[in-house]
Length: 96
Image (tube, rainbow, N blue to C red):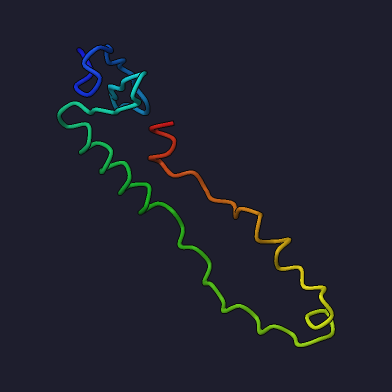
């Protein structure tokens, strides 16, 4: 089948976790066959039900007002460049 966007490329079929995905290698478009979106939604719902609830989040502790913040030794910029760890979701694994 030809890509509906590119009109020149052939779609490639891939099966991941029991779901057939057609994708275009050029424009990276993704198409699903009839019923495949329903399968994705069902799997996502099952996974969400089986996951444990996350730990409660606590408010950030109040900033201490000590000499480090007044003498130019504030290290907030050091930590802002780090990305927090994020668990991969079912969908990210499916379309990766």
